[in-house]
Image (cartoon, rainbow, N blue to C red; front, side, top):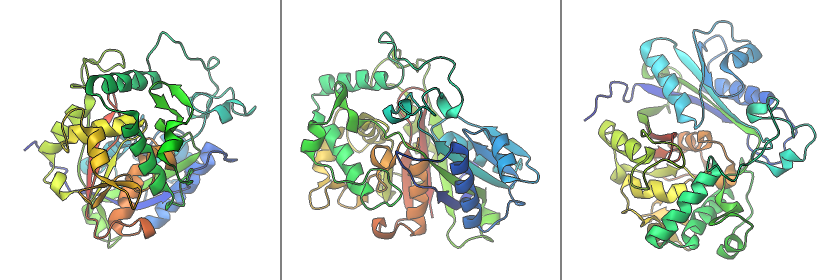
Length: 390
């Protein structure tokens, strides 16, 4: 068992979301401010209690100013996916650098990911995070960075293991079915396999429905120590284990193959740090920024062997519910995930896990949910793992 003194010592006590839209009319900062204020209220604390702030964009010190937090002793800005921010908040609390930490994440469409944003005169020259872009957005065909890397490896996966595009389609349909019961989701219309197979191809073998959805919106969380959490709520969600992983060759065109990248590192570390594993899972949140990533996480977590993820999903397909239901009981991304709720870079997955473990998910609620497994991130330099429990 790996050394893990922080196990079950940090709790999430507040959570909030603005919901997600593809045609928002608000600024990124206003969305972050709303989510943060609502999360602070949900936690039952005031802005005077917040002495740590962690997030991405806008920068943490800007959020401190936006919210008028009197004094803060820990503030950092982390890259996505969102588990990086969660781990930083955990370490700040465990070390005593802060007592109550606000963690936030914003999604804001820009021309790099959204045709609608590119055609908007107020956004077409914006870069990541809403700052002016240093040059017009472009895509070099010689590069396999970003989405091109996943399409290349997805093609290799289908070729190497004989998987079918329908296997990827199950992931997209599962997300859309689940999003239909999530009022925060951007895309809620039903989706069929025919819809998937005839959708616009972006880069073979991945179509528009295989790629996460550009949205505007924000999530926010309040974290504190377990001791403090007991005074704030009857339903704290404990962080049982958390990790991230990468390998020496972690660029899209440099990983040695499907057998060795960040996901395998995360699974090994998570297995060593956690007292809980597959038999204990009540709800599962694999990353789905690209549908192909979901199949890979399912395989690497140990539900099936390499190349068997598609067949596993197909054999665990709930025809009546039109969704994945592992072993007839474990839903996968019940909020709709990145493909239908919106491309939240993991914050939506964590938010839904917290809501499920609190028993507050409404018609999406998994009966008696006590343990959630999350595997955000992809292959290259951002694979992550998180185990939450009541």
